[in-house]
Image (cartoon, rainbow, N blue to C red; front, side):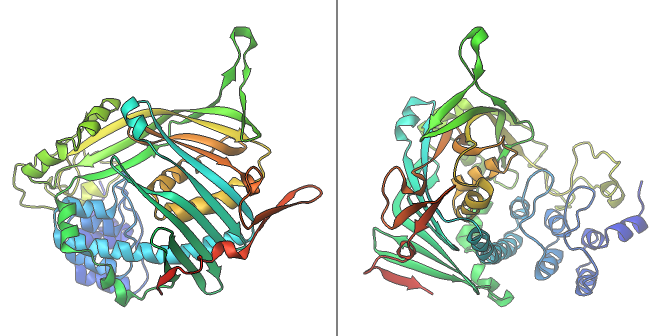
Length: 467
Protein backbone atom coordinates (compact mmCIF):
# COMPACT_ATOMS: atom_id res chain seq x y z
CA UNK A 1 0.00 0.00 0.00
CA UNK A 2 1.24 3.52 -0.77
CA UNK A 3 2.30 5.79 2.07
CA UNK A 4 1.65 9.47 2.75
CA UNK A 5 5.08 10.54 1.41
CA UNK A 6 4.35 8.86 -1.97
CA UNK A 7 0.94 10.54 -2.17
CA UNK A 8 2.43 13.96 -1.37
CA UNK A 9 5.12 13.44 -3.99
CA UNK A 10 2.84 12.14 -6.79
CA UNK A 11 -0.34 14.11 -6.06
CA UNK A 12 0.63 17.23 -4.07
CA UNK A 13 -2.54 19.22 -4.91
CA UNK A 14 -4.84 16.26 -4.32
CA UNK A 15 -3.16 15.64 -0.95
CA UNK A 16 -3.74 19.23 0.19
CA UNK A 17 -7.40 18.92 -0.83
CA UNK A 18 -7.69 15.61 1.05
CA UNK A 19 -6.40 17.15 4.29
CA UNK A 20 -8.37 20.37 3.57
CA UNK A 21 -5.29 22.63 3.78
CA UNK A 22 -6.61 25.39 1.51
CA UNK A 23 -4.01 27.94 2.71
CA UNK A 24 -1.10 25.76 1.57
CA UNK A 25 -3.05 24.87 -1.60
CA UNK A 26 -3.28 28.57 -2.53
CA UNK A 27 0.49 28.98 -1.95
CA UNK A 28 1.33 25.98 -4.12
CA UNK A 29 -0.93 27.12 -6.95
CA UNK A 30 0.57 30.62 -6.96
CA UNK A 31 3.94 29.07 -7.96
CA UNK A 32 2.46 27.67 -11.23
CA UNK A 33 4.61 24.58 -10.67
CA UNK A 34 1.76 22.07 -10.67
CA UNK A 35 -0.63 20.53 -13.18
CA UNK A 36 -4.01 21.68 -11.85
CA UNK A 37 -5.80 19.23 -14.19
CA UNK A 38 -3.85 16.10 -13.18
CA UNK A 39 -6.05 13.03 -12.55
CA UNK A 40 -5.51 10.92 -9.44
CA UNK A 41 -5.60 7.10 -9.45
CA UNK A 42 -9.43 7.20 -9.27
CA UNK A 43 -9.73 9.58 -12.24
CA UNK A 44 -10.44 12.83 -10.36
CA UNK A 45 -8.83 16.25 -10.83
CA UNK A 46 -8.08 18.27 -7.65
CA UNK A 47 -11.31 20.28 -8.24
CA UNK A 48 -13.42 17.14 -8.71
CA UNK A 49 -11.89 15.72 -5.52
CA UNK A 50 -12.57 18.95 -3.57
CA UNK A 51 -16.20 19.04 -4.71
CA UNK A 52 -16.82 15.33 -4.05
CA UNK A 53 -15.30 15.63 -0.56
CA UNK A 54 -17.33 18.86 -0.02
CA UNK A 55 -14.14 20.84 0.70
CA UNK A 56 -15.67 24.23 -0.10
CA UNK A 57 -12.60 26.33 0.83
CA UNK A 58 -10.32 24.20 -1.37
CA UNK A 59 -12.84 24.44 -4.22
CA UNK A 60 -12.82 28.26 -3.92
CA UNK A 61 -9.01 28.30 -4.25
CA UNK A 62 -9.02 25.94 -7.25
CA UNK A 63 -11.79 27.87 -9.01
CA UNK A 64 -9.89 31.13 -8.43
CA UNK A 65 -6.89 29.53 -10.19
CA UNK A 66 -9.14 28.61 -13.17
CA UNK A 67 -9.42 24.86 -12.63
CA UNK A 68 -11.53 23.35 -15.41
CA UNK A 69 -15.15 22.92 -14.28
CA UNK A 70 -16.16 21.17 -17.53
CA UNK A 71 -14.48 17.91 -16.60
CA UNK A 72 -15.97 14.49 -15.77
CA UNK A 73 -14.96 11.64 -13.50
CA UNK A 74 -14.62 8.01 -14.63
CA UNK A 75 -18.36 7.39 -14.04
CA UNK A 76 -19.25 10.22 -16.46
CA UNK A 77 -20.46 12.69 -13.79
CA UNK A 78 -19.50 16.35 -14.17
CA UNK A 79 -18.19 18.70 -11.45
CA UNK A 80 -21.60 20.46 -11.41
CA UNK A 81 -23.43 17.16 -10.93
CA UNK A 82 -21.11 16.20 -8.08
CA UNK A 83 -21.73 19.64 -6.51
CA UNK A 84 -25.50 19.01 -6.70
CA UNK A 85 -24.91 15.63 -5.05
CA UNK A 86 -23.38 17.31 -1.98
CA UNK A 87 -26.61 19.26 -1.41
CA UNK A 88 -24.51 22.35 -0.59
CA UNK A 89 -26.09 25.46 -2.23
CA UNK A 90 -23.02 27.69 -1.67
CA UNK A 91 -20.67 25.20 -3.34
CA UNK A 92 -23.12 24.60 -6.21
CA UNK A 93 -23.55 28.35 -6.87
CA UNK A 94 -19.78 28.90 -7.13
CA UNK A 95 -19.25 25.92 -9.40
CA UNK A 96 -22.16 26.87 -11.69
CA UNK A 97 -21.01 30.50 -12.03
CA UNK A 98 -17.48 29.40 -12.94
CA UNK A 99 -18.77 26.74 -15.35
CA UNK A 100 -20.95 29.25 -17.22
CA UNK A 101 -18.05 31.72 -17.34
CA UNK A 102 -15.70 29.04 -18.74
CA UNK A 103 -18.33 27.93 -21.27
CA UNK A 104 -18.78 31.50 -22.45
CA UNK A 105 -15.01 31.97 -22.80
CA UNK A 106 -14.65 28.66 -24.67
CA UNK A 107 -17.48 29.69 -26.96
CA UNK A 108 -15.95 33.11 -27.59
CA UNK A 109 -12.57 31.53 -28.32
CA UNK A 110 -14.01 28.58 -30.24
CA UNK A 111 -16.39 30.26 -32.69
CA UNK A 112 -13.76 32.48 -34.43
CA UNK A 113 -11.52 29.39 -34.67
CA UNK A 114 -14.34 27.35 -36.26
CA UNK A 115 -15.10 30.18 -38.71
CA UNK A 116 -11.39 30.46 -39.58
CA UNK A 117 -11.33 26.71 -40.24
CA UNK A 118 -14.37 27.05 -42.50
CA UNK A 119 -12.75 29.93 -44.42
CA UNK A 120 -10.24 27.48 -45.89
CA UNK A 121 -13.03 25.21 -47.22
CA UNK A 122 -15.00 25.78 -50.46
CA UNK A 123 -18.26 27.74 -50.16
CA UNK A 124 -21.54 25.82 -50.20
CA UNK A 125 -25.28 25.76 -49.63
CA UNK A 126 -26.97 22.60 -48.35
CA UNK A 127 -30.22 21.63 -46.66
CA UNK A 128 -30.37 19.22 -43.71
CA UNK A 129 -33.82 17.73 -43.36
CA UNK A 130 -34.58 16.51 -39.81
CA UNK A 131 -37.47 14.07 -39.46
CA UNK A 132 -38.38 12.68 -36.06
CA UNK A 133 -39.95 9.23 -36.08
CA UNK A 134 -41.19 6.77 -33.48
CA UNK A 135 -42.33 3.17 -33.43
CA UNK A 136 -45.17 4.27 -31.10
CA UNK A 137 -48.12 5.38 -33.33
CA UNK A 138 -49.43 7.97 -30.82
CA UNK A 139 -46.00 9.58 -30.49
CA UNK A 140 -45.39 9.35 -34.23
CA UNK A 141 -48.29 11.68 -34.93
CA UNK A 142 -46.75 14.29 -32.62
CA UNK A 143 -43.31 14.17 -34.24
CA UNK A 144 -42.32 17.24 -36.26
CA UNK A 145 -39.85 17.73 -39.07
CA UNK A 146 -37.69 20.67 -40.06
CA UNK A 147 -35.23 21.62 -42.78
CA UNK A 148 -32.09 23.46 -41.70
CA UNK A 149 -30.81 25.65 -44.53
CA UNK A 150 -27.04 26.15 -44.29
CA UNK A 151 -25.19 28.91 -46.18
CA UNK A 152 -21.40 29.20 -46.03
CA UNK A 153 -19.29 31.90 -47.70
CA UNK A 154 -15.69 32.50 -46.58
CA UNK A 155 -15.81 32.80 -42.78
CA UNK A 156 -19.55 33.59 -42.74
CA UNK A 157 -22.22 31.04 -41.87
CA UNK A 158 -26.00 31.29 -41.80
CA UNK A 159 -28.38 28.58 -40.57
CA UNK A 160 -32.18 28.89 -40.94
CA UNK A 161 -34.50 26.78 -38.78
CA UNK A 162 -38.10 26.58 -37.59
CA UNK A 163 -37.52 23.97 -34.87
CA UNK A 164 -35.91 25.66 -31.87
CA UNK A 165 -35.79 22.90 -29.31
CA UNK A 166 -37.30 19.93 -27.52
CA UNK A 167 -38.47 19.78 -23.92
CA UNK A 168 -39.87 16.40 -22.84
CA UNK A 169 -42.88 16.07 -25.18
CA UNK A 170 -43.06 19.72 -26.29
CA UNK A 171 -41.52 20.98 -29.52
CA UNK A 172 -40.56 24.66 -29.54
CA UNK A 173 -41.36 26.28 -32.86
CA UNK A 174 -40.20 29.58 -34.33
CA UNK A 175 -38.62 31.01 -37.46
CA UNK A 176 -35.00 31.96 -36.83
CA UNK A 177 -31.76 32.54 -38.69
CA UNK A 178 -28.43 32.22 -36.89
CA UNK A 179 -25.68 34.22 -38.61
CA UNK A 180 -21.99 33.92 -37.66
CA UNK A 181 -19.55 36.40 -39.22
CA UNK A 182 -15.83 35.94 -38.72
CA UNK A 183 -13.59 39.02 -38.30
CA UNK A 184 -9.89 39.54 -37.62
CA UNK A 185 -10.52 40.39 -33.94
CA UNK A 186 -13.21 37.77 -33.23
CA UNK A 187 -16.71 37.10 -34.48
CA UNK A 188 -20.21 38.52 -34.50
CA UNK A 189 -23.24 36.33 -33.95
CA UNK A 190 -26.76 37.41 -34.92
CA UNK A 191 -29.97 35.67 -33.98
CA UNK A 192 -32.64 36.88 -36.41
CA UNK A 193 -36.23 36.34 -35.24
CA UNK A 194 -38.39 36.57 -38.38
CA UNK A 195 -41.64 36.54 -36.37
CA UNK A 196 -40.90 39.58 -34.16
CA UNK A 197 -38.56 41.13 -36.80
CA UNK A 198 -35.83 41.60 -34.21
CA UNK A 199 -32.09 40.90 -34.53
CA UNK A 200 -30.04 40.07 -31.42
CA UNK A 201 -26.40 40.97 -32.07
CA UNK A 202 -23.52 39.68 -29.95
CA UNK A 203 -19.92 40.61 -30.62
CA UNK A 204 -17.85 37.79 -29.20
CA UNK A 205 -15.32 39.26 -26.81
CA UNK A 206 -13.63 37.78 -23.78
CA UNK A 207 -14.92 38.77 -20.35
CA UNK A 208 -12.40 39.47 -17.61
CA UNK A 209 -12.35 37.36 -14.45
CA UNK A 210 -14.01 40.27 -12.63
CA UNK A 211 -17.21 39.72 -14.63
CA UNK A 212 -17.81 36.24 -13.23
CA UNK A 213 -20.58 37.55 -10.95
CA UNK A 214 -22.59 38.23 -14.13
CA UNK A 215 -22.79 34.46 -14.54
CA UNK A 216 -24.09 33.71 -11.03
CA UNK A 217 -27.26 31.60 -11.13
CA UNK A 218 -30.40 32.75 -9.29
CA UNK A 219 -31.43 31.30 -5.94
CA UNK A 220 -34.45 29.77 -7.70
CA UNK A 221 -32.12 28.08 -10.19
CA UNK A 222 -29.97 26.62 -7.39
CA UNK A 223 -33.06 25.39 -5.50
CA UNK A 224 -34.45 23.79 -8.67
CA UNK A 225 -31.22 21.79 -9.15
CA UNK A 226 -31.05 20.72 -5.50
CA UNK A 227 -34.66 19.46 -5.55
CA UNK A 228 -34.44 17.66 -8.94
CA UNK A 229 -32.71 14.40 -9.90
CA UNK A 230 -29.22 14.54 -11.44
CA UNK A 231 -29.56 13.10 -14.94
CA UNK A 232 -26.94 12.28 -17.56
CA UNK A 233 -27.67 10.73 -20.99
CA UNK A 234 -25.06 9.50 -23.44
CA UNK A 235 -24.60 7.12 -26.36
CA UNK A 236 -22.25 4.26 -25.50
CA UNK A 237 -20.04 3.93 -28.60
CA UNK A 238 -17.77 1.15 -27.28
CA UNK A 239 -19.82 -1.78 -28.56
CA UNK A 240 -21.07 -0.28 -31.84
CA UNK A 241 -20.25 -2.22 -35.00
CA UNK A 242 -21.00 -1.28 -38.63
CA UNK A 243 -22.29 -3.83 -41.09
CA UNK A 244 -23.11 -3.49 -44.81
CA UNK A 245 -26.82 -4.11 -45.48
CA UNK A 246 -27.69 -6.80 -48.01
CA UNK A 247 -30.33 -6.89 -50.76
CA UNK A 248 -31.87 -9.73 -52.75
CA UNK A 249 -33.03 -13.20 -51.75
CA UNK A 250 -31.13 -16.28 -50.63
CA UNK A 251 -28.18 -17.03 -52.91
CA UNK A 252 -28.52 -13.78 -54.85
CA UNK A 253 -27.84 -11.45 -51.96
CA UNK A 254 -25.55 -8.49 -52.68
CA UNK A 255 -24.44 -5.29 -50.93
CA UNK A 256 -27.40 -2.93 -50.72
CA UNK A 257 -27.31 0.49 -52.43
CA UNK A 258 -30.03 3.14 -52.57
CA UNK A 259 -30.38 6.44 -54.44
CA UNK A 260 -30.79 9.32 -51.95
CA UNK A 261 -31.44 12.76 -53.49
CA UNK A 262 -29.77 11.68 -56.72
CA UNK A 263 -26.68 10.12 -55.09
CA UNK A 264 -25.93 6.41 -55.02
CA UNK A 265 -25.34 5.37 -51.40
CA UNK A 266 -24.06 2.25 -49.66
CA UNK A 267 -26.39 1.28 -46.78
CA UNK A 268 -24.86 0.37 -43.41
CA UNK A 269 -26.38 -0.67 -40.09
CA UNK A 270 -24.81 0.29 -36.79
CA UNK A 271 -25.58 -2.42 -34.24
CA UNK A 272 -25.43 -2.28 -30.44
CA UNK A 273 -26.19 1.43 -30.17
CA UNK A 274 -27.00 1.97 -26.49
CA UNK A 275 -28.58 5.14 -25.14
CA UNK A 276 -27.81 5.19 -21.42
CA UNK A 277 -29.65 7.43 -18.95
CA UNK A 278 -28.39 7.59 -15.37
CA UNK A 279 -30.44 9.31 -12.67
CA UNK A 280 -29.13 10.15 -9.19
CA UNK A 281 -31.43 10.80 -6.23
CA UNK A 282 -29.21 10.74 -3.12
CA UNK A 283 -29.43 14.52 -2.53
CA UNK A 284 -33.24 14.60 -2.58
CA UNK A 285 -35.69 14.58 0.31
CA UNK A 286 -38.20 11.71 0.45
CA UNK A 287 -40.95 13.99 -0.96
CA UNK A 288 -38.70 15.09 -3.87
CA UNK A 289 -37.86 11.44 -4.60
CA UNK A 290 -41.55 10.56 -4.86
CA UNK A 291 -42.06 13.46 -7.28
CA UNK A 292 -38.97 12.46 -9.30
CA UNK A 293 -40.11 8.86 -9.67
CA UNK A 294 -43.67 9.74 -10.71
CA UNK A 295 -44.15 9.86 -14.49
CA UNK A 296 -44.78 13.41 -15.71
CA UNK A 297 -47.58 12.60 -18.17
CA UNK A 298 -49.60 9.52 -19.19
CA UNK A 299 -47.76 9.65 -22.55
CA UNK A 300 -44.32 9.52 -20.90
CA UNK A 301 -45.53 6.68 -18.68
CA UNK A 302 -46.67 4.80 -21.80
CA UNK A 303 -43.36 5.43 -23.55
CA UNK A 304 -41.47 3.92 -20.63
CA UNK A 305 -42.13 0.40 -22.01
CA UNK A 306 -39.15 0.94 -24.32
CA UNK A 307 -36.70 0.91 -21.44
CA UNK A 308 -34.74 -1.62 -19.43
CA UNK A 309 -34.14 -0.33 -15.92
CA UNK A 310 -31.32 -1.22 -13.55
CA UNK A 311 -31.07 0.07 -10.01
CA UNK A 312 -27.56 0.08 -8.61
CA UNK A 313 -28.04 2.04 -5.45
CA UNK A 314 -25.36 1.85 -2.79
CA UNK A 315 -26.94 4.66 -0.78
CA UNK A 316 -28.39 4.36 2.67
CA UNK A 317 -29.65 7.91 2.71
CA UNK A 318 -31.78 7.60 5.83
CA UNK A 319 -28.79 7.53 8.17
CA UNK A 320 -26.93 10.65 9.28
CA UNK A 321 -23.25 10.94 8.41
CA UNK A 322 -20.69 12.53 10.66
CA UNK A 323 -18.26 12.87 7.77
CA UNK A 324 -20.29 14.14 4.80
CA UNK A 325 -17.35 14.08 2.35
CA UNK A 326 -16.07 10.62 3.28
CA UNK A 327 -18.80 8.65 5.07
CA UNK A 328 -17.20 5.30 4.15
CA UNK A 329 -14.06 6.44 6.05
CA UNK A 330 -11.72 5.53 3.19
CA UNK A 331 -8.10 6.23 4.15
CA UNK A 332 -5.86 8.24 1.81
CA UNK A 333 -3.58 5.19 1.55
CA UNK A 334 -6.54 3.14 0.24
CA UNK A 335 -7.84 5.88 -2.06
CA UNK A 336 -4.53 6.74 -3.75
CA UNK A 337 -3.41 3.12 -4.23
CA UNK A 338 -4.64 1.91 -7.65
CA UNK A 339 -4.19 -1.72 -6.58
CA UNK A 340 -6.66 -1.43 -3.70
CA UNK A 341 -10.19 -2.56 -4.57
CA UNK A 342 -12.61 -0.34 -2.66
CA UNK A 343 -15.39 -2.97 -3.13
CA UNK A 344 -18.01 -0.49 -4.25
CA UNK A 345 -17.14 2.07 -1.57
CA UNK A 346 -16.26 5.62 -2.64
CA UNK A 347 -15.74 9.10 -1.28
CA UNK A 348 -18.62 11.57 -1.21
CA UNK A 349 -22.22 10.94 -0.27
CA UNK A 350 -23.15 7.34 -1.30
CA UNK A 351 -24.84 7.49 -4.68
CA UNK A 352 -28.38 6.33 -5.34
CA UNK A 353 -28.36 5.68 -9.09
CA UNK A 354 -31.00 4.33 -11.48
CA UNK A 355 -29.70 3.33 -14.91
CA UNK A 356 -31.90 2.93 -17.98
CA UNK A 357 -30.42 1.30 -21.07
CA UNK A 358 -32.22 1.55 -24.40
CA UNK A 359 -30.86 -0.45 -27.34
CA UNK A 360 -31.24 0.76 -30.91
CA UNK A 361 -30.09 0.05 -34.41
CA UNK A 362 -28.94 3.06 -36.42
CA UNK A 363 -28.72 3.22 -40.22
CA UNK A 364 -26.40 5.20 -42.53
CA UNK A 365 -26.51 5.90 -46.26
CA UNK A 366 -22.97 6.76 -47.46
CA UNK A 367 -22.00 8.26 -50.83
CA UNK A 368 -18.43 8.22 -52.16
CA UNK A 369 -19.21 10.95 -54.74
CA UNK A 370 -20.91 13.63 -52.61
CA UNK A 371 -19.57 17.17 -53.33
CA UNK A 372 -19.15 18.08 -49.62
CA UNK A 373 -16.46 17.11 -47.10
CA UNK A 374 -17.82 15.84 -43.78
CA UNK A 375 -14.75 16.89 -41.76
CA UNK A 376 -13.89 20.20 -43.49
CA UNK A 377 -17.35 21.63 -44.23
CA UNK A 378 -20.05 19.90 -42.19
CA UNK A 379 -18.34 19.16 -38.84
CA UNK A 380 -17.55 22.86 -38.12
CA UNK A 381 -21.25 23.68 -38.77
CA UNK A 382 -22.35 20.86 -36.43
CA UNK A 383 -19.84 22.17 -33.83
CA UNK A 384 -21.35 25.67 -34.10
CA UNK A 385 -24.90 24.42 -33.63
CA UNK A 386 -23.99 21.91 -30.88
CA UNK A 387 -23.13 24.87 -28.62
CA UNK A 388 -26.83 25.62 -28.17
CA UNK A 389 -28.78 22.69 -29.69
CA UNK A 390 -29.11 19.36 -27.88
CA UNK A 391 -30.06 17.39 -30.99
CA UNK A 392 -27.03 18.75 -32.87
CA UNK A 393 -24.90 17.76 -29.86
CA UNK A 394 -26.23 14.18 -30.17
CA UNK A 395 -25.55 14.20 -33.93
CA UNK A 396 -22.00 15.41 -33.22
CA UNK A 397 -21.42 12.53 -30.76
CA UNK A 398 -22.59 10.09 -33.39
CA UNK A 399 -20.63 11.28 -36.43
CA UNK A 400 -17.41 11.65 -34.44
CA UNK A 401 -17.22 7.86 -34.37
CA UNK A 402 -15.14 6.00 -36.93
CA UNK A 403 -17.76 5.83 -39.68
CA UNK A 404 -17.17 3.75 -42.82
CA UNK A 405 -15.88 5.77 -45.82
CA UNK A 406 -18.16 8.13 -47.72
CA UNK A 407 -20.37 11.13 -46.93
CA UNK A 408 -23.42 10.31 -44.74
CA UNK A 409 -26.15 11.66 -47.06
CA UNK A 410 -28.73 10.19 -44.69
CA UNK A 411 -28.41 9.15 -41.04
CA UNK A 412 -31.01 7.62 -38.75
CA UNK A 413 -30.05 7.80 -35.07
CA UNK A 414 -31.72 7.35 -31.68
CA UNK A 415 -32.38 10.67 -29.98
CA UNK A 416 -34.74 10.65 -26.99
CA UNK A 417 -36.28 7.52 -25.49
CA UNK A 418 -38.41 5.98 -28.29
CA UNK A 419 -37.61 8.78 -30.72
CA UNK A 420 -35.39 8.48 -33.80
CA UNK A 421 -33.96 11.36 -35.81
CA UNK A 422 -33.51 10.95 -39.55
CA UNK A 423 -31.16 13.54 -41.07
CA UNK A 424 -30.96 13.80 -44.88
CA UNK A 425 -28.70 16.17 -46.83
CA UNK A 426 -30.22 17.60 -50.00
CA UNK A 427 -30.61 20.52 -52.45
CA UNK A 428 -26.82 20.82 -52.54
CA UNK A 429 -25.72 24.21 -54.03
CA UNK A 430 -29.45 24.92 -54.72
CA UNK A 431 -29.33 22.55 -57.73
CA UNK A 432 -32.70 20.81 -57.07
CA UNK A 433 -34.65 23.90 -56.04
CA UNK A 434 -33.57 27.47 -56.69
CA UNK A 435 -32.53 29.50 -53.64
CA UNK A 436 -32.35 33.34 -53.73
CA UNK A 437 -28.76 34.69 -53.74
CA UNK A 438 -27.24 31.21 -54.25
CA UNK A 439 -25.74 30.24 -57.61
CA UNK A 440 -23.25 27.75 -59.02
CA UNK A 441 -20.53 27.68 -61.64
CA UNK A 442 -19.63 24.51 -63.54
CA UNK A 443 -15.86 24.32 -64.01
CA UNK A 444 -13.92 21.66 -65.91
CA UNK A 445 -13.63 19.09 -63.15
CA UNK A 446 -15.80 20.51 -60.35
CA UNK A 447 -18.75 22.70 -59.51
CA UNK A 448 -18.31 25.90 -57.44
CA UNK A 449 -21.09 27.30 -55.26
CA UNK A 450 -21.60 31.10 -55.27
CA UNK A 451 -23.22 32.57 -52.14
CA UNK A 452 -24.03 36.31 -52.13
CA UNK A 453 -23.04 38.68 -49.26
CA UNK A 454 -26.70 39.66 -48.75
CA UNK A 455 -27.41 36.21 -47.27
CA UNK A 456 -25.52 37.27 -44.13
CA UNK A 457 -27.25 40.62 -43.57
CA UNK A 458 -30.50 40.99 -41.57
CA UNK A 459 -33.53 42.01 -43.67
CA UNK A 460 -34.18 45.76 -43.88
CA UNK A 461 -36.63 47.12 -41.33
CA UNK A 462 -35.66 44.63 -38.58
CA UNK A 463 -34.82 46.15 -35.15
CA UNK A 464 -31.24 45.50 -33.92
CA UNK A 465 -30.69 44.77 -30.21
CA UNK A 466 -27.61 43.90 -28.14
CA UNK A 467 -24.03 45.01 -28.67
